[in-house]
Length: 389
Image 1 (cartoon, rainbow, N blue to C red):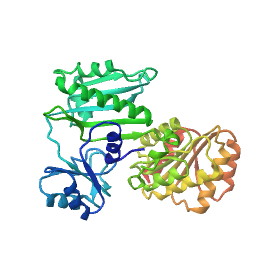
Image 2 (cartoon, rainbow, N blue to C red; image 1 turned 90 degrees about the vertical axis):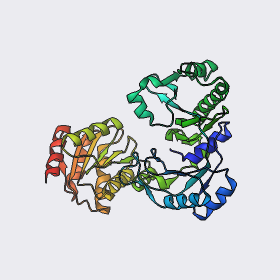
Image 3 (cartoon, rainbow, N blue to C red; image 1 turned 90 degrees about the horizontal axis):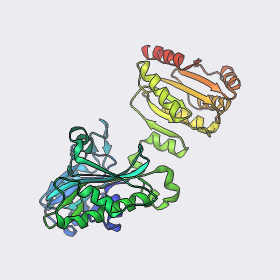
Image 4 (tube, rainbow, N blue to C red; image 1 turned 120 degrees about the horizontal axis):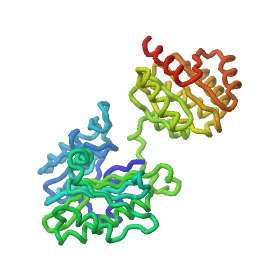
């Protein structure tokens, strides 16, 4: 679950990480009042969306007069913002953050993630702040420093020193204490809130050796939301794809993609293999839909309905290996979906595993027109033929 920048900064402020004074507005007439409360000039007007690269898309504006704050707010609210991370369709800006401008002397990058190779929380620190960290990793990887943390021990002062004194040149002496404090608090937030990412880019250092988190990003592990109920209230459904939101309601793992072949599978590994098969056939997957092992007939029905709501879908590939999810349950769900929603695109079915004979029999006895694939290779051939039509 992603948080907006202003939500992440609220958490930062309460956790002892300095952030600029700011106010969120949802209407243009609120912008004038914000300039009377927030120190300026300059002011920074920032679109609040769940996407990075806002500056490149025109979603961050630095202004010097109150009327410019109003104009910038008006230009963003309700508009579609297209950034390198949103795709060409963009996202709608529903709220804007107006902040005081901070005079920057130097910028750092700081984040906390889980390194899957070491299975450890890992802090990343770099002097190349204020830029795309992915570009830095490609062009100047030596500027990126990592510190792996043993969860059993937690964050220690030497971890901060390892990062700070490995810089060339190291940060100014007067700023070291402030930077160490920010690092310790980032780790605390990461562990306490079950985060998958805590990021500050840039972490600004002023001439008088003060630090400010000028941007903030926090992602929460969805699987931990049962113990983060307060954070769940911060979720913004407007930022989600409508079909993904519908799937979430029925506990389905669905991600909408840009292709034309809908896919339904059980198991993430099988899902990835099925998507590869679709691409090998010369098509593109329209979605990632993993119904899981505990799917019910109703969940299967809803899954098919969700796939069909995507008008780009030219065919559906159902690839199920029956284990916990029996093939007969899947078949009944597909038939039920066909009765509720007319399936006007070719349906390709590959079933194997528990109760596979019963599942195939249910499909054969239905009025549903479908193609049977015996294995992934044949499924690929059938998908290829449908794409070629």
